[in-house]
Length: 371
Ligand SMILES: NC(=O)C1=CN([C@@H]2O[C@H](COP(=O)(O)OP(=O)(O)OC[C@H]3O[C@@H](n4cnc5c(N)ncnc54)[C@H](O)[C@@H]3O)[C@@H](O)[C@H]2O)C=CC1
Image (cartoon, rainbow, N blue to C red; front, side):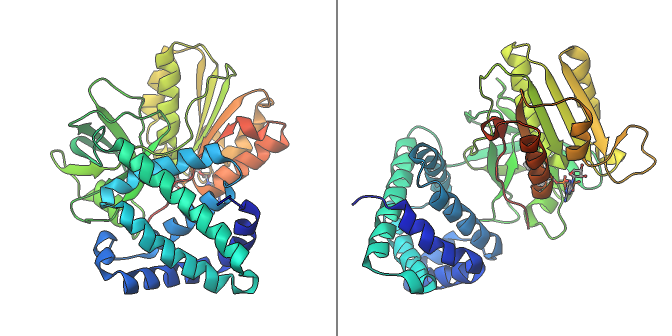
């Protein structure tokens, strides 16, 4: 069976505009035919539906670049071990997926399109199953993590330090899924805000989102001594060894993975010039400024630039961080790392490309927002 990305993409293009309907149909079908699988999913399925489509969209659009797809599916397969997913579950999911695409792409559906979907799904499922099998016996499906420090930097933002009982190898810039005892089976993504440390501690920067189950619990109801559960590291926004100077643009708690990358540059001993712009709405929300300033004082090649967008009286650089970035020189010969609210990331990337930076030198990642 050979892959036919074109047919998969064309038919998926009819499903994408009705993504939420299609996701509801998919899960309805999956649970009607396999009621025992319901217990593996969270009680409220809204975020889960978005995730399904997020992952599916990414897979479909990366069918032409097998390396990127293999690495993403490998991470996904390892991550799914924490749900107790077994190889036979992939058959049930594949059947429900095929029924869903057949229904929502009915106008182009024929035996050729069906064969293209079957071969794409089989290839994807095999990559996930193989990665999960390779990881079993080598690393755990999840990591218990004890809260050893909890700092409320603003009423809504906490910086939480966790100690893992066992080492979790990860790359700076990657993120993990987090589950709290209060909300079993509800997992939310947070970036690790530090480069790997010998004592196996990791830091998270968490903003309590209104209606966000996990983020609110982490900021308001989590104490030193509590235990959280972390899934394996995911994400492709990791440092490269290009030798170019770095521009880092962070919005709000999107600072977390950027800080890990800057720590990595410091630890690697390379003297690349690093500009780190941290955008916040108010001066108070520059929640990590003390730490960033301390880092800046230690390294003459690191420049930290706070930018505040929604406080007219702020006595420093004002404006949206993407727009403030252009007040310096051209960044075209730099590598860029960008993280924050989706609209801010989008604006920053557009401005960088317009300014002449090759898209391949711009690094960003897609995580999921609460609730
Ligand atoms: N906590 C974590 O570990 C991680 C968080 N993120 C994401 O980072 C984001 C952080 O959000 P908040 O802290 O609430 O940020 P925020 O809403 O306080 O905004 C931070 C900065 O982004 C700018 N901004 C906001 N909306 C904008 C828009 N529409 N257009 C242009 N600029 C805009 C603001 O002016 C400010 O400079 C979330 O989307 C989160 O999912 C991403 C990766 C890791």
